[in-house]
Image 1: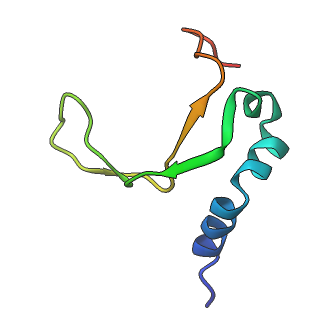
Image 2: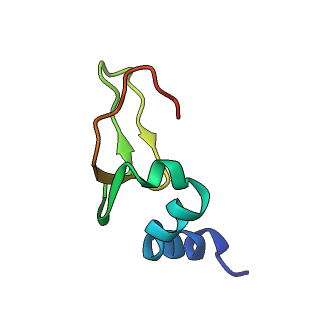
Length: 73
């Protein structure tokens, strides 16, 4: 059986900027999508709760404008 999850992740990494523009165009204007750093998928919360959390894909991006506290759009 093909691993569609891994194929989708590979496509998302390759076409990340296009994906963000297509589905989140208002947000895309806030990010520098020319450089994406893919991060380690383990998360250790601060303060540590003793659990290890594993995330699927994590991208680090530069922003053109600072986030506004309390903003969700």
